[in-house]
Amino acid sequence: MTGGMTGGMSGVWRIPAALAGLSVFGLAAAILGDGVWDWLCWATLAVPLAVCLVKLWRQWPGRQTAGV
Amino acid sequence: MTPASLRGWRLVHRWTSLICSANLLILCVTGLILVFHHEIEHLMGEDLDSSYTEGQARLPLQSLVDIAQKADPALVPKLLSFDPEDKAVNYIYLAKPEERGFDLGRWVVLNGFTGANQMLKQPEETLVGFLLKLHVDLFTGFAGQMFVGMMGLLFVVSTVSGLVVYGPFMKKLAFGILRFGRGTRIGSIDLHNLFGVATLVWAFVVGLTGAILSFSPLITGYWQKTELAAMTARHPEPMTGPAVSIDRVAASGLAAFPGKELAFIAYPGNEYAGSRHFSVIVRGHTELTQRLLSVALVDAETGVVAEAAGTPWYMTVLMLSGPFHFGDYGGLPLQILWALFTIVTGVVTVSGFVVWLKRPRARSASANRGASGAKLGSKA
Image (tube, rainbow over the protein chains, first blue to last red):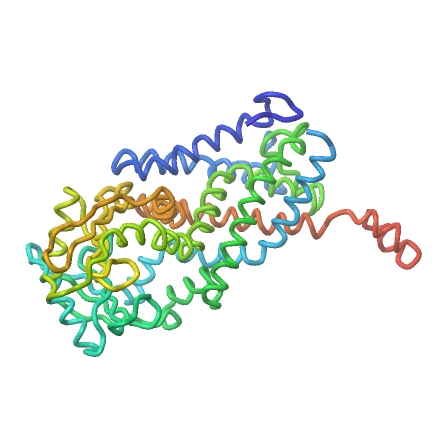
C-alpha cells in the first residue's frame, strides 16, 4: 500500500494499514487452529471495532472530552 | 495520483456503491440475523434431530438409504451428503432412475444413529429459511442469485475504490476525526471514512466470498463438466451386474484417503459420478482441511477404487469462501464480532448514501437559479 500523493507510508495510512494487518491476521487465525488461535482471532478482530467505538464515543456531539 | 484519475476513482466509488446499496442493506439486515442461524433454529425448535446416546453405533448407510426410499419407492438414491458440523445428520437425495441432475427429486434428512426421518420444511416456512432465501436470491431463484452475486462484485469494487479515494481526502485530516458539529454532510463523510477504512478488510473479504458463493452453481458446474467429467470418462465401462453395498463403497473410498471423512457419495448414473462408478468425496477434520475435498471413483461392481484425485484450486476457493462469509469458524465470540462488523458496514452504507444525498448541487443550482434561486442559495 503506497501513500499516493502523500508519498510512502505516511500518517494517512499508518493506522488503516495496522488495522488491515490485524484484520487479515485475525480472519486467518481461527481457520488455522482452535484454542489459542481462536483467542488470537477474537482479540485482533476486535481492534478495528474498538477503534470505531472509541472514536465515536469521544467525539459524540455534546461530549466535552477533547482529543481525537 | 493525477486529478483526472482521482475524479475517475470517485465516480467508480460513487456508482458502484449507489447501485449495490439497496441490495447491500438487505444483505446486512438479513446477514446480521443469519450469523446466529444455529441459535435461532434452536430457539424456534427448527433444528434437526441429531440426538443419539453416547457410544451408540451409526446405522449402516444401506439402512439409511432403505429408510429414505420408503418415503417414495418410485425414486432411487442419487446422492448422500454428510453434515460436517453435525455428525448425526445425513441428507439423501432421491430421484427418478433416469434423472442425472438435481432438480426434480427430493431430499430426505435422516438421523444417522436412529434413522429418524425428519421432514425438511420449505424455506418459506421457517424464519431462517425465509431470511436465507431473501439473502441469497431475493426469492427469484437462479437469476436472483446471479444478480446478488453481481451486486457483491460491485460492492468489492466499491471497497477498493473507496480505499483509493480515502488517501487524498484524508491528506490534511487526522485519522478518525468526526466533525459532527459541521453539518450532516461533513459528519456523514467522517463517519463513512472512519468506519469504512477501519473495517475495510472484513468488508472486502465478506463481499468477495459472498460473490463467490453466489456463483457456486457455475463453479461446481464447471468442475463437474471439466475435471470430473474427464475423470469419469476414463472409466466408461457400463454396469453388467449387481452393485456392491453402499457401505463397502464408502469404506473403499475412505481407505483411499487415510484420515479423511465422508462428505458426499454420488451414485453411478448421476452427473457427479461415472456410468458404473460411485464418486466418494471426502474431506479432512480440521477447520481448514474440512474445506479441502478429494474424490475417489469406486467401481460399483467390484468395490475397487479406480482413480483418486484432489479437487482443483477454484473448488478449494469456493469451499473456503463459506467460513469467511458466514463467520462460523471461531465460536460464538466470532459470530458476535461478525454481527458487529455487519452493523458497521450498514452504517457505512447509510452514511455514504447520505453523503451523496447531501452533495453540493453547484451545477444544477446555476441552471435553476432563475426558478428557485433563493431556496438553493440558502442551502449553499
